[in-house]
Image 1 (cartoon, helix red, strand yellow):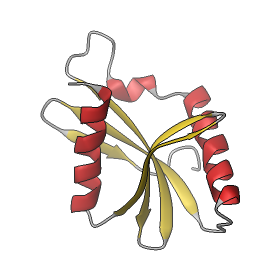
Image 2 (spheres, one colour):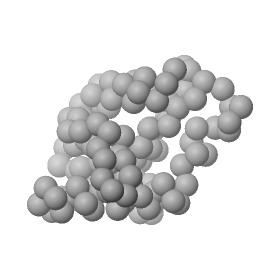
Image 3 (cartoon, one colour):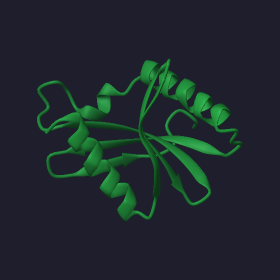
Length: 109
């Protein structure tokens, strides 16, 4: 499976939860956000990580402070560019061979 396939599985998962998908692979000069979605009134910036084996470590462990910082910078840019003043959060969706694991509200606890 490749990155786009993990993102497609994550998108289907989020749609099944009733989320509205606004954008995929949103790019700004500071980086990329895999999925931008709306859950009710809340905007959610979603990072997707995937992997079939643990030979490169667990996919969830490949999300660190630097990636979180870049997503935040892109999120603020997206909000400013679209003149939005919404509450938002950052989630991580990990796609493995047989399961999807969802970590909500990263970096704001």
